[in-house]
Amino acid sequence: LPRGEPVPPGPANRSACCQTEPLMRASFLPFRQMPLDLVICLDSSASFCRDHPTSSLEEAVSAKTVLITAESPFDCAKSFIESVAGIAHVPEVHLALVRLGDAAEEVCPLTADRREFLTKLHDTRRSDCV
Image 1 (tube, rainbow, N blue to C red):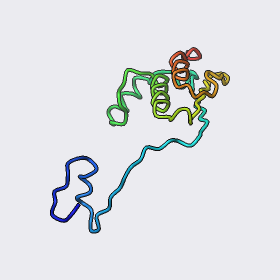
Image 2: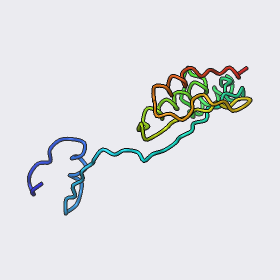
Image 3: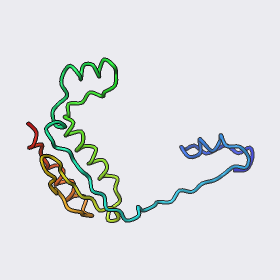
Image 4: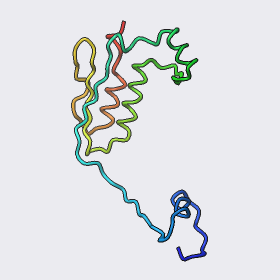
């Protein structure tokens, strides 16, 4: 911008007014992920799937170290995996899901089909949990 002209509104321009001389301009272009095979392991063992014991949860809450949710650790892990799958660039990123319990079980083989991956993730149950 020429000296003395107001900076147009917008998130990118707010930081530009804080720069020193010379004014730097940046242009952001969309990018695509390099090809990647990502195998995600989901722990469904009984020790992981048990809900937090009340006493340790109360201690964590009093120490303000935990965000209280109604989800079990297993459901939280599934939500996290769903988030990762949601930002993966397809078809460049192939996702696979392996469930770990008493033994490793392939839930979803490597696929570029996000819908297939998410369907198999949602169908995954904590059947090994006691």
